[in-house]
Image (cartoon, rainbow, N blue to C red; front, side, top):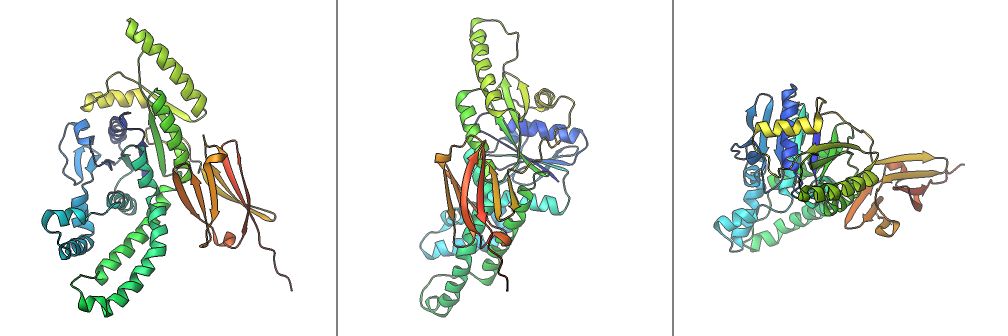
Length: 394
């Protein structure tokens, strides 16, 4: 299964690019699905069809899905939803409010990753194109397996211990429902599935991120930050799709000014992102609806090439062993050393804090007892060094 994740600042045209990409893959014979993880879905609008939270076939080889979290909760985690709703009711919150509050933060992200796992395990599709929310939400989605496991490892065991005590004490005297064994098992399954999702998301030959950008200053700046943070989370950013480039040849003073402005920002894009693979789309419309317009967009971006191609399979994080040192290398483009903080955690992991984002990097067994010896940021790559333990000889 090939997973293509399109992301970028809100309004840059991610949805149009995603649907056009999926349509072109389907036309080439790939079993394809385009799925939206944005709570403000718009792929149905782009295709000019209706979607209802279930997978729907829209064209030969092409399915579509807009994730509806209420539907997903009832379908996948009805025991969890039922418990939270029951708990809310016990606290005086009833009816629809309890139902809505049973959907806790992050469930949309979990649901999206569950679909990816299902598609991969069952070989259901050749290509999955994911249309995401604006950058900040996408970062939460892609970092969710790390974050969920970090919390689960520390909290899950504590919850189980507390529940065993509560069932013998509090549960006998208080009118407050306690999680059943089924609820706890569902939570544990989610933890295991997030580990599986992490493997798929960090496979640079299978999963890649494409940054959609417009030739505008604010968009370029946000795209730079997104690129850095995606590398921090070890996601393969394979190319840049420069969307809404004004086509040459339109006369008039307004467009002459626009061309000059665009040329300045196109130069900046090349200065900043070269030698990354770049694809360009010349168009003026900010709204593309219907298959004909989406086909033209695909022609514009991909020509007669295969949209599912992997333009780069380089992982932005890798480990190395040298003589008496272990090294972790992390690509962190557009990052200044003043933005980086490093901590060696007690659980044998390294916490890397870059700007507003933080990642907990689990160390391999061979490095767990090694002492952090230093770090260096050079040419956009952070290298963290660990001194190997001295071998004990008898």
